[in-house]
Image (cartoon, rainbow, N blue to C red; front, side, top):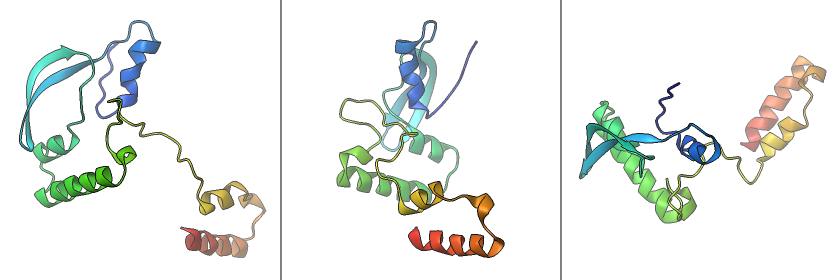
Length: 132
């Protein structure tokens, strides 16, 4: 069986946990903000994400790419945990649960929607909107 996935770095940990699973990636050359894929398969996981370079190749408007790079730099300067990779070189989980639960989520967890009248449901919508 073959599985192809991009930008899902949680899969790179599977060879350590499952027999018969291997990571491979396409070799790539970077030059400034551009990338060229060499079409040669290499063993192991990719060393980094090429998401912005691939987005540019796909025709995403330059202003969007520029803003995304700016936002990435901003996040990386504010908090090392906001960067795409952690200090140990592994990518942060995109599916991790936030440490703090928002007030809106807490309110929803305690809500029984089947017990609400239409009027109460509308009031809940406004209450939740004020919490976010």
